Image (cartoon, rainbow over all chains, first blue to last red; front, side):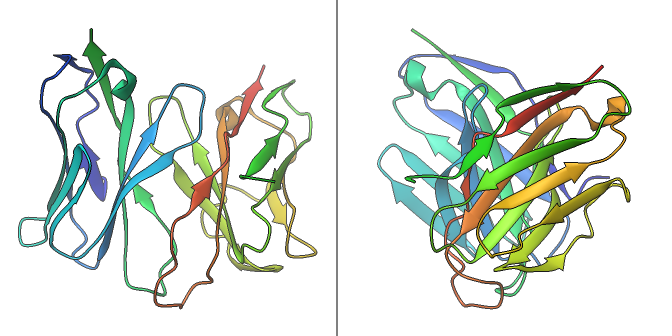
Amino acid sequence: QKEVEQDPGPLSVPEGAIVSLNCTYSNSAFQYFMWYRQYSRKGPELLMYTYSSGNKEDGRFTAQVDKSSKYISLFIRDSQPSDSATYLCAMRGMDSSYKLIFGSGTRLLVRP
Amino acid sequence: GAGVSQSPRYKVAKRGQDVALRCDPISGHVSLFWYQQALGQGPEFLTYFQNEAQLDKSGLPSDRFFAERPEGSVSTLKIQRTQQEDSAVYLCASSLAGAGQEDQGEAFFGQGTRLTVV
């Protein structure tokens, strides 16, 4: 079993929809949680960076972390065709742990 | 430069050939990482440098893989005697802070080198 599980999709939604992307994990030592967006043939780009449990909002994006359930989510409001990409969750342990553990990514398609 | 630069963007190698992949991190960034991303998968950690010191190479899949960062800036990932299973995108990332600092900050990724072994 992988340390981080993520539904690969693809997830297809109409423009303007609210999108929910999720990851579950097994390692309770993870403290830092990230969401990356990766366009085709590009490198991952950091969207959200969260420490421990709670919510964080940035524009149309909201990240939620529930450490008790080992479950993280990314919500995208008013989705746009330009949001079509693969979304990768990533996480790591305490400050001295530099190694990111990624999920396999969810492909999102926002239809105009 | 403005971001992490990797070259070449694409590399086709015949099985058994040696390849060298280059990474130019953001100037002044202490930490440098190499990840391997197979098709349809998330990146997997290969190795980590803090300045010129290779602190972790636990993710390198075999002794055919070798990485260096001799002057603490540019890094090269070398793969000897390439095999078909080495086909993947190789991503380099850098971050400002070193391991052990309270806020390591964001890791910036390059666009990757797509290696195809035929």
